[in-house]
Image (tube, rainbow, N blue to C red):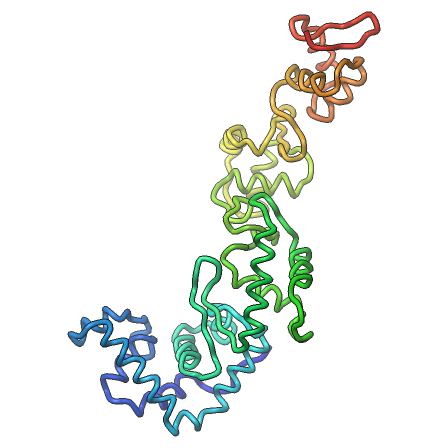
Length: 342
C-alpha cells in the first residue's frame, strides 16, 4: 500500500499563509481547513462578509491563483508529484471518495488533501453528474477510455441482469483498449467501476444496474429474490426468512415473508410453501391450470407425459396430477388414453 510522506495540514497552512486575512478565511471556509471542518457554501461565506456569492467566488479563485504563482508553491513541487504518482498508482482515474479514503479516514486531513488537489496544476476534476461520481485524473486520453468503457458495460445490461464480479471485470478488459499493462489489474478495474453511478454491486458481490431491485435492495422481497436465486431451486418461505437473516443480517418474520412472496410476480408458488423464480420457467396457477397450459402448448398427451411435465412445474405428488385429470369439465380422454382440453 502506497501512502503519502508529507503532512497535508502543515503544507496547506504554509501555502495559505501568504494570503491576506480575508482571502485566507475564504479558502479555510470553502475547503474546511480551519477550526470548523465543515465546508461552507459561497452563500454562507457571503453572508458572513456581507458580499455576494459571486464576489466570494472571485476571492477564492484569486487566492488559488496567487498561491499557484508564488515561489512557495514551487518549493512544494515534490508534494504534487507525490499526489500525481498516487493517482497513477490507483489507476490514473479515481473517484474523489476513493482517493481521499485511501489516503486517510480522517475528515480534517481529507479536506487538506482535497485542497491540494484543487490547487495542484497536474490534477483535473470531473464533477459529479447523472452517470459518474466526482473523480480525479491527470491523463485526458486515459480518462476518456475509462469513461467510454464503463458506458459500454452498463448499456449492455438490462434491469434484471446480475453479473459476477469476475465476468464484469473480464468484460471491462474486453472494452478497455490501448492502455498500459500497469492498469490491467483487477483492483484497478474495480476502482474504475466504482466511479459509475449507473452500475453497482449487491451484498452478494454481483454486479448490475444500480436502478435494479436486485442491486439496490429496498425490502424483504428483494432479499428473498437473491436468497432463492443463490439457492438455485425452490425454497420454503420459512427457509427463505431464515436465510435472509443469515446472509444479510436482516430480520425477516416467517409470516411476513410468506405474504411478501405471494404479492411479487417474480416468485411462483410451486408446492406447499415452496417458492421458485418465475424466470426459471415456472408458471402460475393451481395444478389444473398448469395441466391446461401444458396441453395448450403440447397438444394431446398421455397420463405419464402430463405427470412428467407437471412435476417439472410443481412440487406435488404424481397422484395429485392424476386426480386433476379426472376433471371432466376441463379435460377429455380419448380411446388411446390421451388427454386434451375440452
